[in-house]
Length: 240
Ligand code: CAA
Image (cartoon, rainbow, N blue to C red; front, side):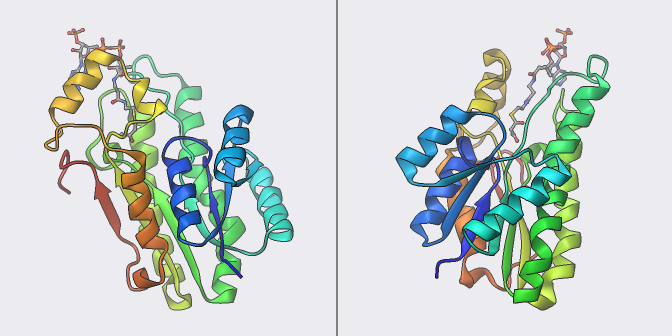
């Protein structure tokens, strides 16, 4: 039977590309999403992916949602923590709510998904967790103290949990994407984005499937000795 892979924020952008790649790789893929029913319907119809709606930042909702996936589809053997939001603004203008919401979803979501799925992976002695961090968690970014802190936190979370899973063949890794051609990046004001793209040595935004192929490797049998690592896929924008 095909292994079950859950991709959070899986119906759009990088998440959608990851779902399609993992499906091609032979996983039984489930996309989680929080609010956009239309995108979920398209993902289900166009890509044949099962979609489950719950807020990854809500601990109880994650425990219930993952139990439901377990009961209806099968034990969750791969988790891709991709769900994330931005609430950009300089610190002076950033509200506590903007800070907290980004931490709750982007970083809290990783904790909640791991709480729901990691114990079963350890018991079954196989698992793959891939956390989507960011170049901005590695290098920082003007106007993103919330996002940079959460993404940087993801990189620490990855290295700590990797140590807890290693003996049970549960690998925990991160990908740090650079600026990828998605709705999230499209929301950056054009003038600001032009300046950012000018600093990318490869000379363009990345494509979602270029991230998905990195996730695919980390989820494969071949990557069993890779754990606690971060793969930067950023067109050379930040060499870490
Ligand atoms: N370094 C230093 N100064 C900067 C700067 C920078 N990087 N960027 C802007 N400034 C300066 C501006 O020149 C300006 O100075 P003056 O007033 O002297 O002209 C001042 O800061 C204010 O700049 P803005 O007009 O841009 O301020 P704003 O309040 O209108 O907007 C902002 C601030 C919302 C943060 C806006 O700059 C912005 O959207 N920046 C992009 C942030 C970003 O890259 N987000 C990434 C989203 S995608 C993502 O996160 C995915 C991923 O993982 C990569």
